[in-house]
Length: 112
Image 1 (cartoon, rainbow, N blue to C red):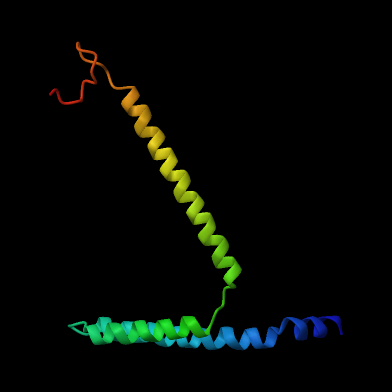
Image 2 (cartoon, one colour):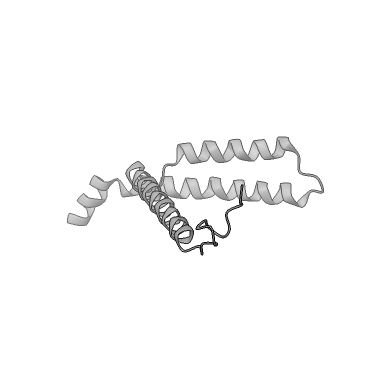
């Protein structure tokens, strides 16, 4: 009885149906891609049709909650900022470690 109540409350049957439908639609898109790739020439029209189908299917079947995507985007943004800071620190450190020439300038710096 408890599991039945949970299934109803979580709308699991509806989610299973949506997931199956999305899987079928993405499989159809995959088949279309394979058909387009099997031709000698790939037309812009064929690519546009596939893109339109994919966008439509993705929009209609949100299988990943928006909150999860937002968390991923935020983590990615933080990671990119950390990478930028790290790269800048490495560049500063490399510049600081460059040997000086007899004039006290950096050896790799062009002389005026």
